[in-house]
Image (spheres, rainbow, N blue to C red):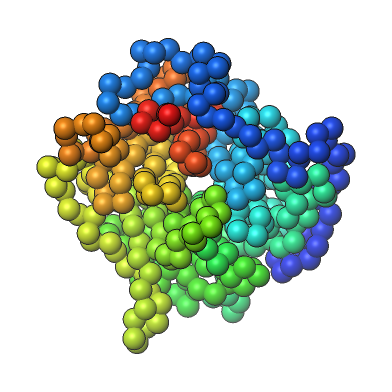
Length: 410
C-alpha cells in the first residue's frame, strides 16, 4: 500500500490520522532527559567501563527490540527519529516510542529548521504500463505531533533531476539508482546523495554518482559540480553512503553554522579516501563549484595518532555526523570494522585531552568490534549527536546505543 502520491511536485496527501496520545506532551514528546541522573540513578554502568582519562561512557539501558535500525537522528523538535524495518519510528528522548510511519524501504532521515522531515526510501510508480520501484525522498510535516502526517512533496528519480527533463526514462537503469544520504543547511537547503550505474562524463544528464541540491520548496537548484563520479581523489563521489552538513540541532540563540560545505563517505572499494570534506566555492567563471579540503592531509603525529584522511582508514563506512557544538567532532560508523570513529575538524582522531591532562595530544576515543557488549556493535549503520550524547543505530543488535564523553559528566 502506497502512502505517497506518484507526483513529485507538491501535492498534499493525508497519510493517516493517529489518535491523540494520553500525554499532552506529544507535540514534542516528553523531552526531559537528565543525562547525569539517567546514568547514576539507573546504576547500570559498571565503574570499570569508565576510561582513565577521557573516553565515551555507555548510557544504559540501550533501546532494544528495534528491528534492523539503519539510521538515527535527533531533530530540531528534540525527538529521536529511527529508520528500521518498520519504516520511520519516532521516540522521545527517554526512548519511548511515540509513532511509527510506514515508508517503503526507508534508509535515511533528516529534518530542517522548519521541523519538516525528509525520509529517503522507495516508491512504486506506474510508467508506460510497467510498475517500477524508484528511489524517492518523502517530505513530511507533522511527523512529531499528534496531527495527521502529511506528505507535501515527493522527490522521485529521475523526475527530480532537472538534467533529466530532456532524456528518456531508463527503466531498470533508474531502478538501479539509490538515494543514500540526506543533509540540510541553515537556510533549509536539502542535499541528497545519489549513486547509480550511469556516470558518463560526456552525457547531457548529470552522473548518477552525485549530490543533488534542492531549495526549501523542493526545486532542484543544482548538483555537486566539480566532483568526480568515476575516479578516486580528494574530490570524488564514488558510491556515497552518507552525507553530513554543518547545521544541526539544537537551534542556537547565538546562531548556527551557515557553512555550505559537507562531508561525505565513499563506500566504493576503489576510493582511497573513504571520508571527504567537500568545500563549496564560487568560481568567477563557473559559478558555484565543489572542491577538496586539502588541509586535512596534515598528519601531525605530535597532535594525534590517527587521521581522518589516512588512506584506507575505513572498511565499509556507513554514516557520518558533525557535532554542531563547540567540539565540532566528526563521528563515523563503519560496518566493516563494527566500530565508531571520532575526529576533530582538523582531521585528528581522538578527543581533546581534559584540562588536568599533561598531554597535548588527542586522546584515542574510537571503539568497537563485533559483539553485543556495551562497547561492541554488529553492522552499525547510523550515528548522530545531540547535546553531548552520541546515538548509534546498531543494526545487527536491533538496538539504539547511546554514549557520553566521560569528561562531560558533571
